[in-house]
Image 1: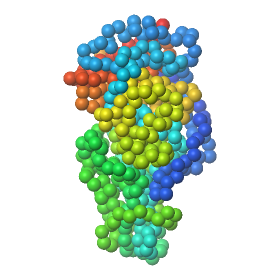
Image 2: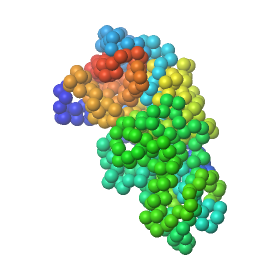
Image 3: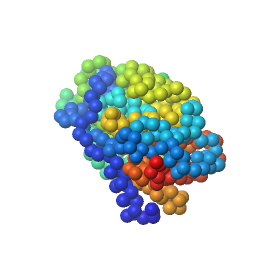
Length: 468
């Protein structure tokens, strides 16, 4: 297929044709309330719309191991891939079609986000939103800003916000700190207060805010109270923006300034304290739904947001809301879903931890599970994946220059990169309309770009074959 706009758009429509819209979903799990700003569930009069895959099930016309092997030839032994672990699964039957070193533990890098997302979608109601609020303190002139674990809370006006280069709409717009300040100031003025003492509560998260492999750009310190993901420049819409060392301090300072602009002065230095249970709410704002947050984290490989989602998994599982708690809770939920977890170790929600291990077979099974008609509530783990040649971390891949343009618009996959590690996991529709799930995990490659292209060639061959 030529890498033209018309051709690429046709391929995109063909890929989307592999999914049919179906109202409703699986039974909702109960919300997991927290005393200080945990998941808040908005009222939903109707069941949310979910994507039901038009996956061909059964064995008639199913791809075979011999067919897949013939299609791929020697592509899986490309030197650019160094040491490759891989698994290719028929999403219609869940059958492993072809693998190589597929049961050995491998470093997933950012494909860890697929595991985090599936666990969150399994545990949390789809209308879950993260709430940042201001409540009354112990004294009449005291208020407390309570962090709800929402790193996307923004100090920007909506027309200034870009996510992956695109403007936001009603569904994707993050919670507004200026709106929170307006609500709070209005409540205070109504009570006759124009000067207050400010406390702030970050107790929702536990453990060290610093990731063991934190670099201050791909992932900064994690806290339950932050604004614009702790970026130094709020409008810096790039993969690895500069991050502040104290995101809580940044958020408190910005909120103080916003109150001042509303005519409310903060006396003295704000202090950290826990809000009282049941304290009167003076103002609150909410994030997009967890489904939208998951899709954003997957499309743009947003480490900060993935870690925040992982902590919501931990809270729902009654685990510590920390890096390690997120990993343990995710693993426990995958086990409950019936996925094989031998060789799986997870120590965070984003995949930045190089100690994470996830065999290729388990990763491909995870993708196939999200595509299964039996689990429609898991579908956003697929719809959030980048579309080859169009969105997110696959926007610049599957091009004519790379010789892989035939995959543009057809492949949906999550990328992963660490030093010496390249991974790719997702779905592709083959020439017979069969949905295949795949996981490709390379270790030790000297040239990451060459490894990416070698992986993309494998997936393009899967798209072109009937694989009988």
